[in-house]
Image (cartoon, rainbow, N blue to C red; front, side, top):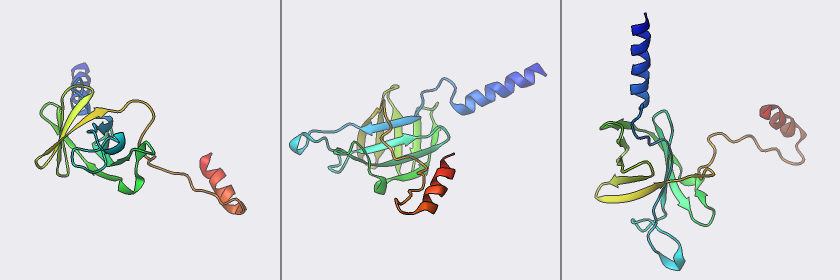
Length: 149
């Protein structure tokens, strides 16, 4: 019985990534020098940000330099799968390769973009937003108050 339990734990660790490098977290594309000192992507567009969830889903979108957050209108998500010992992830037309714990290269076609792990406050919009109550709408206020409990 103990051997079975030990094997089950090993299988869960292997499926969860175990000691393999992890993509989980938020990543922001390194910028290149552009006009007025505002960093830009190597593609010439806005920099890209990635948010790898712990359970095989990645959210990505354009990073707004002035606001310091990802533009909610550009936000997309896709499932991803890891292979090559957890050092490579594939989602959509993109392939991400970890260089170390803090740097990653994402390839889209012939273009390679370098990403740095983002630390600190989240740059992505929340997954769930509470309903907004109008100042003169008492019923909406009650619904929002009850929803937040």
